[in-house]
Length: 430
Image (cartoon, rainbow, N blue to C red):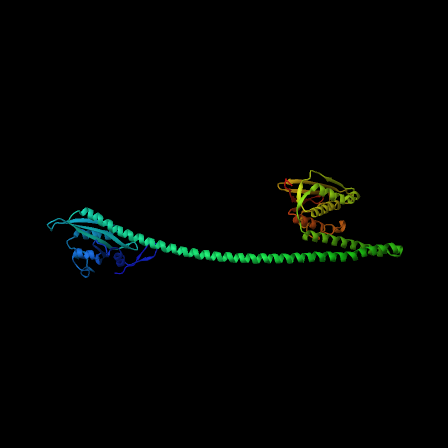
């Protein structure tokens, strides 16, 4: 008989005869294995042959009932163990001899894929102490089975452990390779970043120098155009028609606008590219300096400027902050209705770790649908009426962003505007 048995984890164990052989072949106790409901003998060990006084060839393939025809109780027990799958033991006395002889049977099922395949039998013949003998036999058999189970489990655990160790070693090796590749790649990227940064810095410097050079070269002929147009009007006097004077004035006005546009573009370029190092700045000092620069404009427009303190200390870049304040206050003085004296209010308020600076005016205001575009380059609302290059508020936004802040406004058409920008509050110990 060849019968493969399957373990709980799905792996195949040796066939029935080999399993029996590994446990019982050298055991001193008589043992046999029978198969099926007919209990055909498929294995006997030498001790069983000696007990029955027959050879192995005489026993193999025969029914167990033929081997022990007088042992009805044994056959009944054998049937029950095969049917129920529950191990049992039985002891009976033989009276045919001069001295009492006891036959002890221990039987347990052999299962394959959760169904009975056969029964393994251990038989003992003894003339005395049969109870102790049965217990000793059962202990020996069960110990052999348990030892076999433990050995198989240990072998399986060792196999799995070796497999896991191998997998871990492979994983660690792969990890080391990945780390080495990552380190190498990081070094390459760092070198590439340094190289690209250097190239970008050089390019920016060249662009800035080019912009200043172009601006200087362009502003020179613009100034010449302004000068010659004024001379044309002054020297020709009445000889120049009104149309000619209008043309000359338009040339002068366009030259002035172009000069202002180039000046604002240079400011925007400088703020966008210059290195911004934040330092501790007193807002009051910065505002007083800007108002001093605009003193003439304030007087000419008969404006009222309210600068309400106290002014906190902020982290900012002083030249950039001065340009932002200058542009906001200039716009507040410029964009007011005709014959209306400008009123400008400056104040600050703390908002957590930030300081929000407000510049409020009584100008004509900005409609909500234009507020999103007011900070874009070359955006001019009523430019023909109030002048301007459309770059001033773009400079404000770029400057505030370079200092790590943000900018915004609150306004309604005809009700003035409230521009604001936020900067980080300086540490208390600064």
